[in-house]
Image (cartoon, rainbow over all chains, first blue to last red; front, side, top):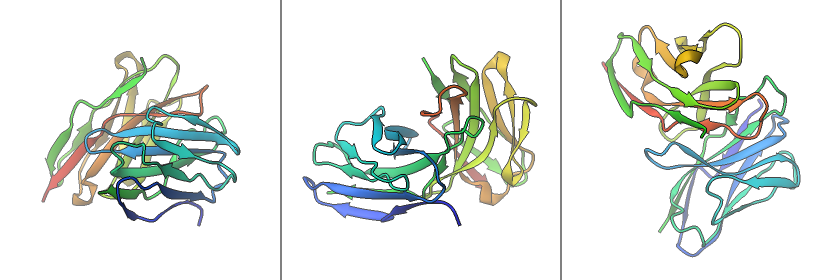
Length: 114
Length: 114
């Protein structure tokens, strides 16, 4: 079955440590996205990538980094510079065809930093 | 500025009652409109989408939504709510000419009373 996988589902880290969240898709989608979700704030865009080896900052990119070395993979690193990293992180992908503008979401990773 | 508002933060309905969730948008281009549903701790699932044509669109799980350009609204409806519909609902807007970013509303949390 085609879809988006995120691992792990739950992640715990100590403050000051970098942590990388995995996102893999087998939908053959060109575009991929990372969102952060906090209670009562909806989804906020961190980074997105429309093609391999290229990505753009979203609305809240500070303290995060990404890479897009393969079409299927778009890992997100939460660095120690992110002041409040505890949140629910969602990865999504989308085909680049016009008329097919919906995003497909992974199950999410809940990151807790103490 | 591009934005999506969902005026109701939380709604409670009785099982079997009808439901309407409100969504208003501000968008300069022709909008592509979406409704997503999120169960606790899960990713987002697309309920329905509007690109063009008939302004009343049907989605999964018995949901429908009506696009009203004059009111900049895209309200979600269901004639008879089931207990399993309890979840968070997000309205989102994108553009025909831009396939990189989608703007999400803050969400409406739905509770269903048995």
